Amino acid sequence: MREKKITQAPLKITLILFSAFILRTAYAFYAYTHTFKEYKTESQQITALDPDGYNRLGLALLERGELSLTPGHLETSREPFYPLVLAGAHFLFGLSPLVGMGLNIVIGVLCCWMTYWVTLSVFQSGRAALIALLFAAFFPEWIYFSATMFREPLITFLSLIWIFLWQKYSDSQSLWPYAAMGTVFGILCLTRSPFIPMGGAFAILAASKIKPKYWAQTIGVFLLCAFILEGIWMYRNERILNRWVAGASMGGSVMYLSLLYNYSRPDIPLEYPLGAGKDAVISSVNSQHLTLSQAEPIFYRACLEIFIHHPALFLGAFIHKLLKLWRPYPNPGWKYPHSIFSHSILSWIGILTGGGVMAFGLWGNILAWKNGYPIGFLILFPIVMSVVYGLFWAVMRYHTTLMVGVIPQAAYAFDTLFLKKES
Image 1 (cartoon, rainbow, N blue to C red):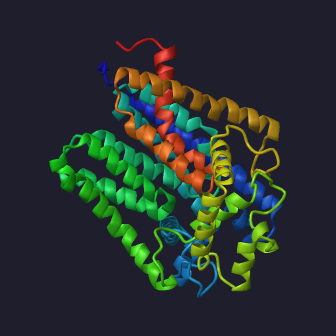
Image 2 (cartoon, rainbow, N blue to C red):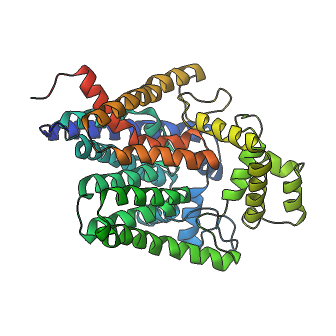
Image 3 (cartoon, one colour):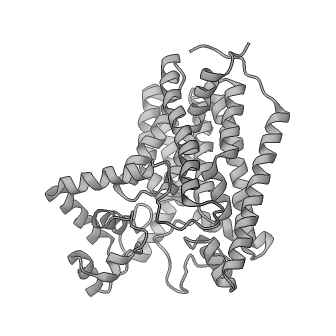
């Protein structure tokens, strides 16, 4: 690997981060005022800014001490960490929906900052790191999620911290870097449980680099710290459902519905097959008056039956979800809240930005392998999570987080192809 001179430009970094903050704040303000004009009541206003209900869960934690949208009915299908963060933010700054949006703005800017440090730690190039910072600061998908209370900014931030710790300290044989990585990974799983398989993939990656005599104090400590955090959540869910749940108790229903129904149809609600009850498995669940959490094992068994007896259907759905996950343009039928652009303009923005970054990322991957840069984790992260999402559920929003492995390599390719070599 060719060594590069590491240069840093504090003023440029500060200006780009400030621009990222202003851009996210302006867009969030537009989203808030646009939503306020469209919806008249306070509850509808919060719902429009909080489409997945995580802010309402945070408020429930703060007001009732329950992770629950309905009093007395505890949630096992929603991971707790993001609602806990929102509850803390509301405790400190009040109950306005602007608090959750402000939190995501700050986290979004921190994602840009961490992207700089991840790129610098991998490619040892201050200029490539600055390019990555620019990409992150102005990447439309990362800006968009500052305007809602989605989990994506927090997931992206935690992922970047984990990648940075590995890139910076993977050669260390001391305990603390792996304890820190395990803690961050555990929190990440408590934010979105489909990341659990990523821990096993990471352990294999680490084992390929670390001598076996150090596995216990590195990989072992990593897994132990993660399990302690995740184990508390598993124990709590086992007490509620009387069965072991690895993460969140909605994986079975989501996987089954993704095999049963084409969710590229925006004109039909996601829950349509559940309400219609025409499918035999869903009819059985409905007749027993089971919640989705209670019926999760039934749905998993049904998925296994499809995999065994109809493998082409299972594989076709998997490929369809992968293609949708990495599609660089939005679905033509969906309504995009807070958008100031038509769908055709949104499509071109997606193709030129998301598609462009992905194309540069692929070329950067080739260049990085050729030049011997340590990009194993940057590649492993989006690949493993794409497979997981392809098996369960894939929407373009999930693709946003996976760009943490793509943007640094895209910046490296851009630097190598278009700019003069650093002295």
